[in-house]
Amino acid sequence: MSPRHFLTLKDLSSAELKQLLSRASELKKIHREGALYEPLKNRVLGMIFEKSSTRTRVSFESGMAQFGGHALFLSSRDTQLGRGEPVEDSARVISSMVDAVMIRTFEHSLVETFAKYSSVPVINALTDDYHPCQLLADMQTYQEHRGSIEGKKVVWVGDGNNMCNSYINAAALLDFQLVIACPKGYEPNPELVAEHKDRVTVLHNAKDAAKDADLIATDVFASMGQEDEQEQRLKDFDGFQVNTELMSLAHQDALFMHCLPAHRGEEVSAEVLDHPDSVVWDEAENRLHAQKALLEFLLCHK
Image (tube, rainbow, N blue to C red; front, side, top):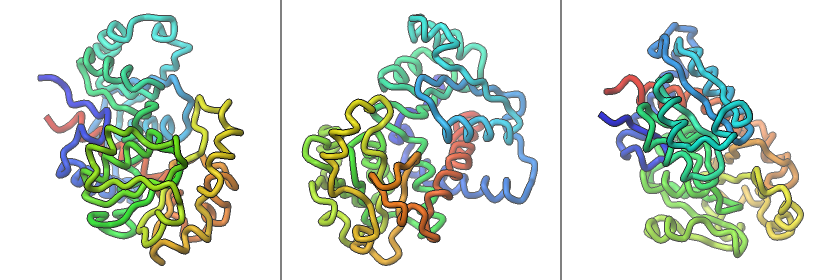
């Protein structure tokens, strides 16, 4: 039987995603109570990093340790992948020695190829096209603070990047309306937008988009690998900062989210990020719990 992979949110059904989010909150409770729960005893997660990371590495590594398993850190500098071994060959070899593989890389096609030749579940921990693990944490956080997100208005402010694409997938699976506010030329994947045109709207004005929002989310204007575009992007994204003025246009109880790391004073004001009601830190912690739920789902449910 071929393994279940998690390359985008669409690898889960709507019912599976909802169950996984509820399970993540249950696992959070178990962890906070200090109860021992080790469903992955003697299991190994191979973690391949071609992009640097803080939250992804700490959350997956901690999650495996808490589950009684082990996480193996592999950077492209330390493996044959970085020396030109075909992805297919690396997939066959690595998957024969571990129980699951997590990959954080640039091209989405790399995780797709790796998954095709892997004998164990493969998890996309970020590619240039999608960041589904972050969406698990975001949706868990919204549910914990405000209940179901179904029928709500979610606003993405900023670049139509991997996070934005994953928000589109989340809108389809969890049945919410998504409004994307970005400068011209920074729109998300047009095919993805067209596929979900019944629930996705693209605007080029952040203030118009923010009206009556239940959740506003953003990300840095220049992601990893785009550092040389930083200056130009700061000019292009003028007027797209999430600040107190923008949040005041949303519903009074609207949440703000950011996948972090944040550049205070650029895509978000320090006032919004560090507000006493900010859920950004819960969102970051929930990477741990959501990914534990994902690992349990992929490895324990046959």
